[in-house]
Image 1 (tube, rainbow, N blue to C red):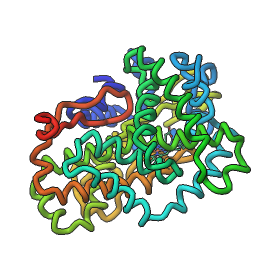
Image 2: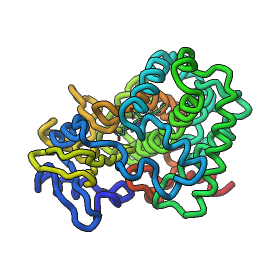
Image 3: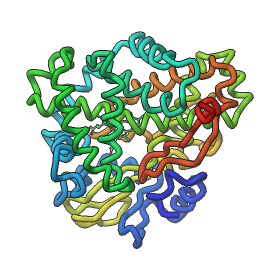
Image 4: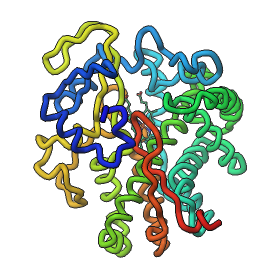
Length: 370
Ligand code: HEM
């Protein structure tokens, strides 16, 4: 199995262990990339300034470059280095850090409780994106529309997706930019510091970054609980421990397995010289299982003394949405645990196709009979 196929494999972890055994940095000929798989090499990759988030010759993927989706993509802090990365990051991190935990809890429960038995795809995708939309000032009547357009934009970025999705992504990007520019409560302070189109793109970036990753976290947590009825029972009586369970899921069976880096100028990684134009796959899900971190890395345990995880990245591009993602997932899963029979009705049908994210395909009996 190739590391880019691993996130949708039933159990990719033994193959990650093999990669780590062979050494921190391995060259794989077929996809023509280097793979960083242990904790030390992954940490070094995130800290290396010569490793950039996009290839020099292709700042926007060719498949979407020609249209609104490419325009939006090119303005995202996630996809830039230097000022185009730092300025939006400086503006939006204080906004994200200042979000009120109570408001996040209330919004999440309210969006989840719109249905007695939420379809798994609603709990995974719609609820988190509508919560972020509400936090950004989206009028409630437009939240579902916004979540749906975010799905279309994100689907168009997936190289494994059908080419027809690109046109839909361009239309969705144009519609999202128009809608988000009209929000009245855009993050205070950001309006003056950022060009309006950069602020709008990066707010859509918050929605799109939430989309797959938070869905994967919630979905993988649902699966972990489906497989462990005793844990489910115990968390039903101690809901205050759900937050620990979510953190263990993001470490043990993470929603994001890897990210890519592109060599901008000659540099060394794990003692190997890399040349401009080469690609490094930073396999965070493997680094989480590196035994140097703890002897029990392979087991699923809520009572970890110190939990080390690379799932949210590290260094200058480290995820600013970690606290929010963990909170939303905790409130969704707590709400699902209150629906006593919910987990017995879940069916697992493999994983959605993705090179970097692990999102289970889940359905419920009610949904199938509807
Ligand atoms: C379980 C959920 C999530 C996971 C696993 C996750 C993971 C990550 C990772 C690994 C990165 C770094 C990518 C890299 O260095 O190549 C990242 C970046 C980012 N994430 Fe998240 N994320 C999650 C949820 C969120 C949420 C909810 C938001 C926003 C509300 C968010 C916003 C961002 C942004 C804006 C960046 C770009 C940061 C930068 O380039 O400086 N993420 N995320």
